[in-house]
Length: 133
Image 1 (tube, rainbow, N blue to C red):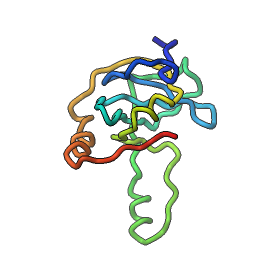
Image 2 (image 1 turned 30 degrees about the vertical axis):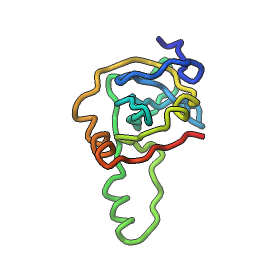
Image 3 (image 1 turned 60 degrees about the horizontal axis):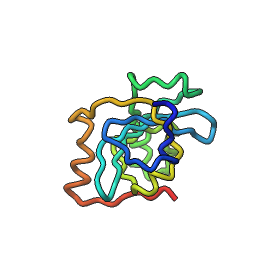
């Protein structure tokens, strides 16, 4: 399973699949496919960073939000920096853009109903998608 690079694979991802993405600093972060629709691949991006693929742990993913400090600065009209390890609960990606990402499949876990809250809002509101060009 670790050998499969989605970027070079013509298959479609499946809900529950977990991929590692290499960051600019050489570390890896993980993302989980929440749902696959004709117009979007919905993923959850975790804040965990791992030094290499061998250390990727899919059993303890963490989502780190913006936090109170960020929100307080924003409320004061300041432009606070977004933390580099920000986790994203739901991110809808264009399927072509997702396919161009260099991702390594590292595992699979069922998608819990609680993980789909953002996805349901997005579907209800007929939201757009992010293109990874």
